[in-house]
Length: 513
Image 1 (cartoon, helix red, strand yellow):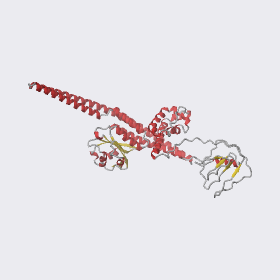
Image 2 (spheres, rainbow, N blue to C red):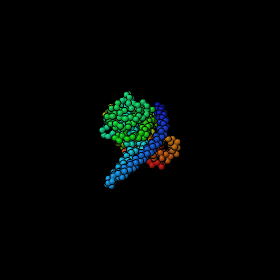
Image 3 (cartoon, rainbow, N blue to C red):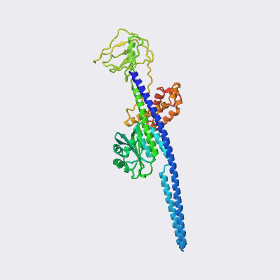
Image 4 (cartoon, helix red, strand yellow):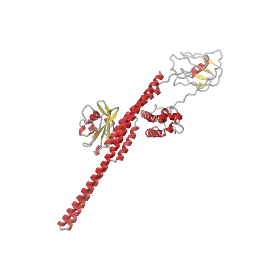
């Protein structure tokens, strides 16, 4: 039965990985589309610069014409007025007018430059946003990162989570302290009446809106308070082939233009990241279930049937999970009820309880000593004052001390049960993020992983990928976990090295904790 379960789980893992590969190919196509949109942003900026230069030339030309006209008028007044003082005042007035025109032109140019965003700044903002989105390990973290990164581009952003025939406020940045988390989560937009929000879901594309077009969504206007003439951009966040959320953005008090293409890129990549997390989480769930599946019980047969004392000694070494064998001196204290105890001269085995414990593995790594001599007659220890009968006591000649069985090495587990709920969530997110990073390394480097396992130099072959993923993991969780536990190292050993740390090779620097 256990083999069937493990086989089924392996098939589930294989299917999940196939889904991941399909999703990643789809993401590659999306990234190509994003690259094209970045080129469009650059072209738009160049056009903007050209237009600004043209307007500056027109302003300068107008200023020159005004100065010339003022000079002509001053000259005419000077010829008509005999008084030289009047001519001087006219010239001074013309000069003042020219300075006023120059100052107005300079101020207009400064305002235009303040509103304009260089393409390098936009590109850097988008790349920084993509890096932060990649570190998200859950869909709600993706939505939170989207609004936070959009606010870094100088806009106010909010995301509404689509649930059936309504969209609920999920995340927002840039609206100030008035928009509390409680107010945001209580902000509901119906999608069964005609509005720009419903249009986004219907067409699956972006919608340009204004405060006037959102008059049917009075609650949105009251809480988000966009400017009366400010442009509003509504973008779909597509996940699983449908619109799973609506991305709202406006320029706030500036009423300036929005970085439309940059926001489109963020929305597209946010949906792709959600799909990626959902696809990977299916494989992770199957692997975690495989880890928790119980192994088939195995009991090693006695090597010398007929030697009763040797069989009893072996039975005494089998302890249920969580139990402990205790080695005591010649006169040990009475063992706790329900647990076997073994001393150096006699093996005392408790009779089976009414409900026997579950079967366990009995592993004997070293051969047992020769069967000890039995001294007749067999003496039974007097029963204590209790309902259960006292186990029989077999006296034997002092045998040589049996070698201790060597248990297989088990990975150290960091106990998070004593931590606060918030700290436990951080540890779970870190473990999930490490699994995601290492799974991607394995997905794209299957041949190198196989060769590395065979030659026991996995780290040498995948050094750049492992180091880059290590930096990404430490950037997000390094300062939080400090030296408590290294989930990234644990996942490298489990996924890439097949639970054998030596397979990583001698060049591997080891865990950070």
